[in-house]
Amino acid sequence: MVAPFNPKAKQFVEGRKHIFKRINERISKADKHIWFHFASLGEFEQGRPVLERIKADYPGKKIVVTFFSPSGYEIRKNYALATGVFYLPLDTRSNAKKFIQAINPELAIFTKYEFWHHYFEELAANRIPLFLISGIFRPDQIFFKFYGGFNRNILKHIDWYFVQNQESVDLLKSLDITRVSIAGDTRFDRVAENAAKPATLPLVQSFAEGHKVFIAGSTWPADENMIKALDAEIPDWKIILAPHEIAADHIKQIENIFPIAIRYSNLNSDNAKAARILVIDNIGMLSSLYQYARLAYIGGGFGVGIHNTLEAAAFGLPVIFGPNYRKFQEAHDLLKLGAAKSIEDEQSLFTAFQLLKNNQKAGQLAKEYVAQQKGATASIYEKIREYLN
Image (tube, rainbow, N blue to C red):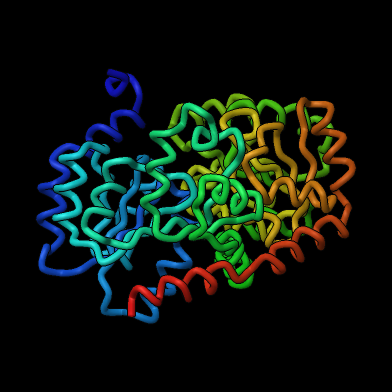
């Protein structure tokens, strides 16, 4: 019903039309596959280190990747290490049966939050091992409510849980689920690897050279309006805005808020040095942009939840974000270390900026935190390899 009026909803619907025809054209039922499923792009980045480790050690293994949301699928639909990348057909009994038959998985790996009743039942019925990686559980989730019996039954189909913290272990144990180990978050491995070898962006380097740069990553309109207020107070800083959505109307909205801003697509060797506010109007650069900044703001905290703080922290940047961060263990950790500040309004944003702008210790603590948390990929891989062998 929403699809005619909402581009994302339209992609969600259109992408699933004739989905089994596309799967059958691309995938041979005679071949075994390792199935990775991700909700969206963020979860893909969490699962990617495990996927790439398996592919490196078992190059002959074939991999199928599925996404629930368009934002993940559209960006990674041509991912080179996968035999096929598809939208996950909606979770019905018949869809689950047809899909499992079509891709013939030898094992399935889901990331963080995705729990699908019919798919999990079908995997269990076919004795296909199922893993959850980078899982994190909280007491307020439906699994732990008195009325959550249906959802608790879904959890029992998972063969092994790799979780991020002890609280998750204890909560699962309260449901008599003991096939659990604390492996941490695979994103630490991913962001550390990226920070060690970031892509060079010559035009951005020219833009940033000789200046203090404040970067705002994965922003939404609420974030951008806050940064507008900060902009007036920091005329000696350059600003990079990398919005979460790069639809034409959103980019235009940002340009209305920041009239002097220049789009990355219009940046060149002649205007880069003179520009003061840069708007990134493409997807895929953000993880490398942080190398040119001193301080980062991470968007999403005035909506459903903050985006990836670790990409910035890996480069040694202190981070600022909005109030909705409770679901993210790394945000709590960075706040406790003094490497981050959470803000609620324009004034608290300015205060946080003043506290962190020259705080080299905060940046170093952020970088050390990422380095100390590495290793989840190796831990997960060692367990999964038992099933591969």
